[in-house]
Length: 183
Image (cartoon, rainbow, N blue to C red; front, side):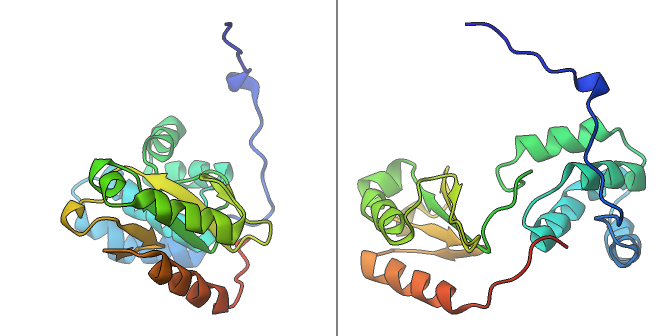
């Protein structure tokens, strides 16, 4: 096995004409997020959450814009984005389904839940449907072991899941209008 290197120091970040971090976002962050922290760097994660929820991913250009806004190195933003599972650099579906696959959920039947989502949507974990509506993830412990099996549908935790309940949740999500994620 060999390490494949890339010319990181000379790589160009794709840049679109308009910023990802809009003037409205910058104003909202300045007024509502920054005052909550003793140092600007403390606002990094809430700002990343905002960008992730707005665009369903965090583009490289947005990371540079956030770094500039907070007065920190771009590498600090990338380190944070690449460390936490919630942040993605590629667009995710409008409905992100995260099925817990740790021990309690495994014992309580998470495989049936995961298999049903795979079957219904035709995707595997860490894939997104072609229409961009759904992304399937397997997640580490969601902290609800006593109500296993559990899954997140976007930010909502669903406990004591059954295949029938998962079908109903998917049906409900399919009724939602498709949103553009390109900003």
